[in-house]
Length: 366
Ligand SMILES: O=C(O)CCC(=O)C(=O)O
Ligand SMILES: [Fe+2]
Image 1: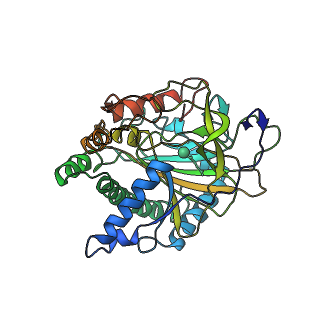
Image 2: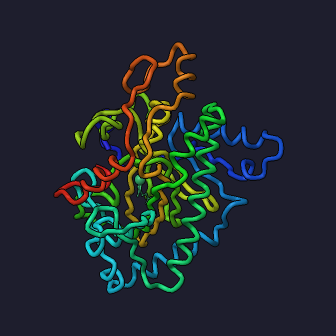
């Protein structure tokens, strides 16, 4: 990392990423709990684009530990991995070997399995439109399918809570809900061997998630996931923000901080579609994984995404809020009020992203 021309090698310990409890939102009797969760989400999305979600009352640490155990069992079986390679299906669903995913032109030091929402008319000759490939590890499919159902439910809960935080009317919420009620979700099960000194890339290169909400469970490994927090005065090279085109590095002011796991919590962050909905008010924040320890790290991100045919455009509630705030300028573009983003057809956008994977030298997040 370059800071004021100096190289910083270690990420400072993060103390400030907020922890937001989902329980008050679930067990609300008077509206107060809901409003407090919504207000906390609003503040976290404006400030960081990242937060911890405490799942007490919704899921137990035992459930997530089991996901980790099953993932390890799978990654220890090379012959099983080869049976479900992405190339055997639609080039998106299935197992990707170590270093096969590329971010910012460099191979990522991880392997993983990708699952997507099943489609009703599968055709493996069309990118994204094939069938999921499940490992034969006993219990794997059953436990992961249960987790997917939970994460879909959580996605709708958090979406509603966020919408409330933005002051949407009930009609506006219904409209937004119709864009996410058949989420074209993605689940990744990722295995990270430790980085070796001769590896050119990272465990997972710096990127912004491109969709809606990411719910990440990771094992107890510390110092691996890092989040880029803006901090005036500290200059580092990063990627350009959403809409900034592909890959050229930009200079931003900030610092990389660790987002270590907290038991009972998921790490949650917003993707670029939320940046569009919120007209730039919420940030889709850069993050990366640098795993240098001695253990094999496992993480399981669930990407709660819009419906495939959703049209994503700045929400009226946000435009109202920004119009009332005479000081509002788009945080990055310094533009005046009004929509700062063109509408995005989610499915088309995703096809381009995933299509990139199969062009030489490009990856999921490029
Ligand atoms: O493994 C992690 O901690 C993060 C992975 C990630 O950022 C991603 O898959 O988008
Ligand atoms: Fe990510």
